[in-house]
Image (cartoon, rainbow, N blue to C red; front, side):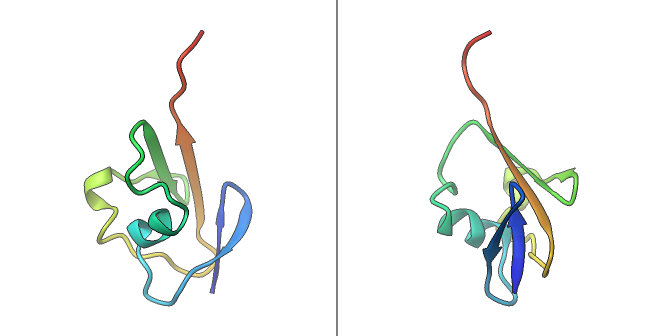
Amino acid sequence: MVCYVNDLPHPVPPAGTLLQLLAALELAETRGIAVALNDFVVPRTDWPAQPIQAHDRIMVIRATQGG
């Protein structure tokens, strides 16, 4: 199955979770990121239980310093 991470296709296993996807992208332990699933922000505490479905749109945003 395929979902889209920052508009790029990414394969995910059936019954995968948001945390599993972020771990595969090496982002699970990264601080300063926010994740939206289909335009809704998912709190970090919900990542382990949040299922990913085919064609879901996931947006990962990193906080940066500067102005």
